[in-house]
Amino acid sequence: MNIVARLPLYARLIRIDTLDKQVGTMLLLWPTMWALWLAAGGLPPLHLVLIFALGSFLMHSAGCVVNDYADRDFDGHVERTRSRPFATGAVSVREGVLVTVGLLLLAFLLLLPLDRLVFRLALVALFLAGSYPFTKRFLPVPQAYLGLAYSFGVPMGFAAVLGTVPVLAWVLLVATAFWVVAFDTEYAMVDREDDLRLGRIQTSAITFGRFEVLAVMLCYAASFALITVVGLLSGRGWVFLAGMAVAVALAIYHYTLIRTRERAPCWRAFVHNNWVGAAIFAGLSLDYLVRG
Image 1: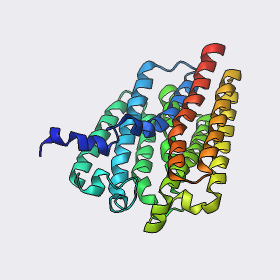
Image 2: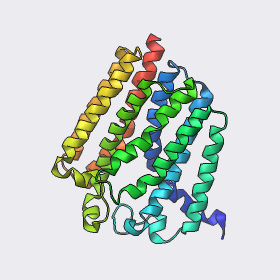
Image 3: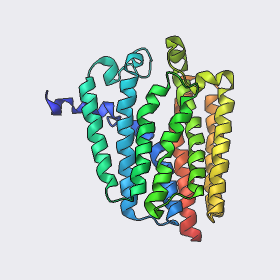
Image 4: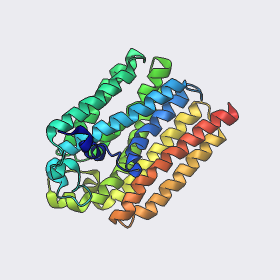
């Protein structure tokens, strides 16, 4: 097997063949950055920022491989995913296992200089991320499970800085989980017709039915309300609130996209959540910079 010749296939497998496919990494990264800035009072150590940034990339990449393996028998029947390497048979299961193990080993090395509590939380995060793809067979809202998996960077970030996980970190985890349910329901709306035809996958877009748009907006509202509470209890002020206002405005824009329930606008809304995470981070970090 010529490894070099197969690198483009592995790049597609972990979504680095095009830059726009890294939105998943960013959606995983933003809550972790919120946590680091809050835990460190606005000035987290650079090495922690780099560790969590690289860790987000590695874990998202590994999660993509596991997800594609779990869905390999379904993806070929879905318009958006039919060309994925597992679905077409271009990559073998053995290759997928080796890629995943390599990514997880690199992620493990990143944990070595961190507090032991971070390692224990990482094991929980790994279990959630690895088991999530299989929950789509039996959970009516697997996006809620994904929300927990995506949110575990929050307590890990607090533990890395403080050596402990305060109550506010768990509130921020719940807030992040609501945000994940919102944007991943938008994602699920893209594939809903294909998933209904297959009849073997459950998603929030199917479970919520005609109320899916309302559910998305309520999840946005719950997420933003809880993040605002966390920010205010952490002493943040008007700059932070301005960032939250931008996030709310972006969510309203998403409503104008998803209310049509068409594939392309729903996909744009999902991808656009990168700017929601960025707006919240910008408001938070600038508030520390401006107000101290």
